[in-house]
Image (tube, rainbow, N blue to C red; front, side, top):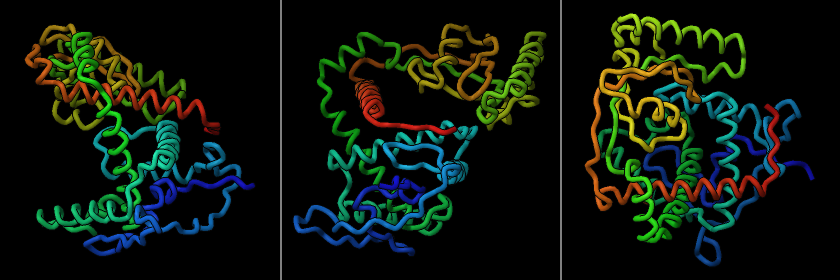
Length: 334
């Protein structure tokens, strides 16, 4: 049997409910046809897909192809709303692999929204846009999507919300309390405000020459701030990213942040206000961080219970994804 082809349309095409076509003008209304049980839209024949050549395939997940075209289209979509450095192709491919695994899990656990669920959500979006003087067509233009693609993306998001809600509800009160007592600094509101000098390496891969140039640039910046040059001026002159125009002002960091920020948190957490770190490497590039303010704990367990539940849910979904990956045959070609 020929391998199935994922394709971007299939990536965004979230289960049977999303096979109902969204109307191209607001209000966007999928028109589902209920199955015999009345629990969802009737099944349709899958679209005919042209098999990609070997060179076009970037990965396979149990025979489902992810192509280089999928990666580039995902990059284009991300770029429309990105405020920071774009992820490299490998990072985008990892996200697409995860998405395939989640989609299959949604089907297995019957988490996909029905046609009626999807229509209700789309009507709510349309009503909200109209109340603020916007339009559905303007939203599609901003996202770079057709109405059909947006419907499928929305179906995926609804299914993910159901998955998150299911796991969150299973967390017992004593588990949340134990988590707070084990790591109070993660949740009690402690935080530091930082500015940064940043050299982006997210798009250069493992090219040793480019990596060396990036390290040389951050070292030169470090020498300047060490010699007494104003931190904000060095950030404006040499830093990359949106924060550079504000003198490197990045904002608040909490003790428990995104995994990608973990090296930065470790480097900056114990510094006094006014001090700065040595060049520190994170997944997106090199950073020099300066502490501009600091706040101590101000939340009790009750005040941060929701954050604890969110973190425990994240941990459980991360463990579930690892299980799904271990059970799948994943082949990467980049």
